[in-house]
Length: 116
Image (tube, rainbow, N blue to C red):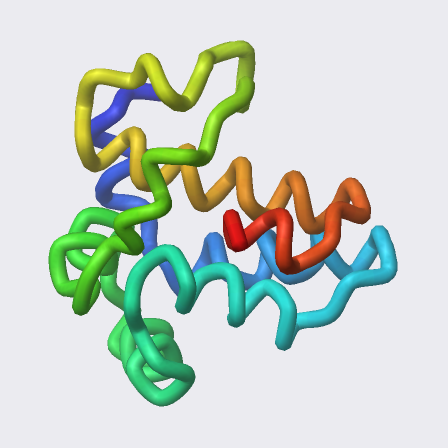
């Protein structure tokens, strides 16, 4: 899938998949929301507004209040690619989010996921 196609995917369509992935492993929607809000700077109401507005991934991240400065500490592999080596800033943010939800689904504690 091309980067352009990923960027134009509606976040409101991806979000339930992220929640479902975490819930299959015994985690909660609230934990997924906490991870998303930590990464993007949205509060719960802001996150919900973005979902309701049906924005694409590109808009979701471009309108994010502030990417967490500790996001650069997110490392590892998603889809066979090291997230810290991704050159496109938007794709890196998308993969950071994937990595955080992966860690949540694998049972990592929220404190470690949020680089606390």
